[in-house]
Amino acid sequence: EGMVRAWLADITPLLIEETYQKYYERLPGWRREKADRMRMKNGKAQSAGVWSLWSRVKEMYGLPGDAVYNLSHSGSCVLCAFSDRPGVKVGCDLEKAGAFREAVARRFFCPQEYEHIMGEKEEDRAQLFYRYWVLKESFMKATRQGMALALDSFEIGWEEQGPVLVRKPAEYMEDYIYQEYAGGESNMKIAVCTTDQEIDRELHILML
Image (cartoon, rainbow, N blue to C red; front, side, top):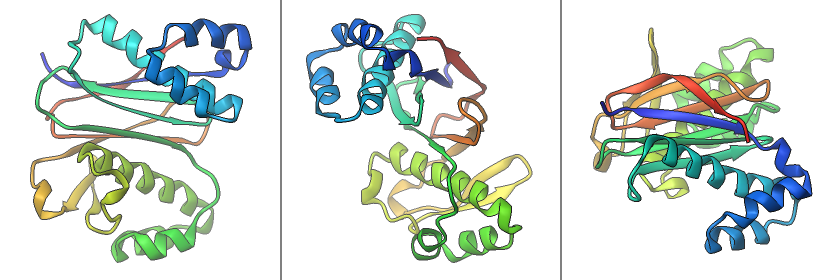
């Protein structure tokens, strides 16, 4: 049966040089170059870790080389989401919630989204802002447009079962659905957006 699944891993072990080298050696050449370009140790660990996670997951499920997948990383966590149905779109994002970036929400989010955040108690605004952020990012990544898509060109609303797209750009009229997850570091916001109509509600964890 086809569905979208999400897997998370903690890259802390890769901060140890010896462990990092073990994973680095198994990376494809282009991914090694990507890791080499990272200046910080954490960036290198994220780059090697996220690809290692995807490789392991691909193997575990016996996925084809052209399987639909998406990757994300933040802090000490890496995330991959994939579907075993061909032709669907999948985007995922994770972000550690920090301070509320009010200017970003005001300038780039839809007016209703901004008002929704501002309607919350002050201490809850950052949490909602980062929920919106990963929901927006995961849709942008699912469309494969990424940051080329304006943050206010689509709008997120809320129903009893969770977030929904209430407005989309005309060229992305397929039915996109969302799943949010809790896991990883505290305050980590995680979202998956896909045109696959089935999403696993459980976030799976892989130990590196």
